[in-house]
Image (tube, rainbow, N blue to C red; front, side, top):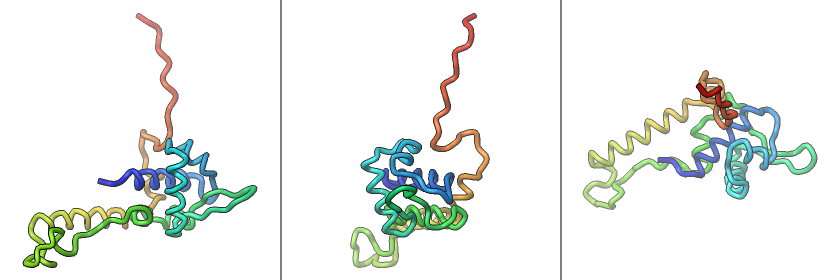
Length: 149
């Protein structure tokens, strides 16, 4: 449902939320999030253009969030790199339908509206604070095999 670009952007901002208010280099983010550096660079450029993250060159520089994790919503991140598209008029271009969507397209648009609202209501702080046994973006060392019986 969401593009690889959205996935990578969300991974990157989650990493930055964990390190906020500090900054990270592109290489650090790529390593932590398992995103190819070249692709991540393009994603980060989009996030900079949208005002989600800022980039500072030089010693002590790096990428950091513009807003605090408690102020930045998932919707802002998604819309920065691959905006959610709502269905306003018949996607088939049927004149008779116009803005009066058929039942199928109305349901599809309603689903997108629900996703949009859920993302609008969710901050990065909520995502990274949620209790879980699955720590995002981290690989656990493999368990050592026990003695054979």
